[in-house]
Length: 182
Image (cartoon, rainbow, N blue to C red):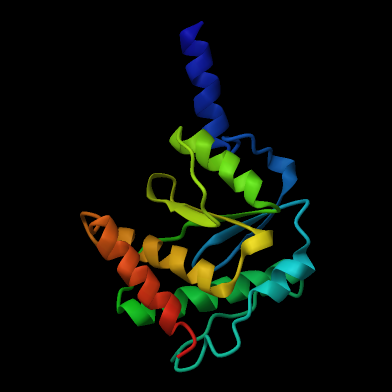
């Protein structure tokens, strides 16, 4: 019985169905730097408006390509621009980083996901889990600076063989937030 249960858990995780996620409840778009999963109850137009990349792309020598004409493609483009800017600010370009980004509608939803993953209370507006290579955020509180902060954690974790101390990681992620539109 235990082998069957473990097998079902493995199948669910490998299919991306962990933590109460069903395959049909996500809008999925794959970009150059990440794969974006938007929960189907998220207002995509509002999400797109909350992520303002005006001035984020200042000084970038390269820019990603817009992969399609759907609103989620425009959001993905913005995430790719933020990835490029974060890597430039940190002067770190780790290969094979490609994380998943999961956008939920409410903060309560990502609080619940955090408890399910970490088995402890967490009150974050967004967070990144290196072991899952996944960034979690919510439509209610998302912004380009919040996303840049979490992407900075992703870049740092992938750049170093050993993750930097938590305070150093927070300091560098905060640096990215402050300099995102410079």
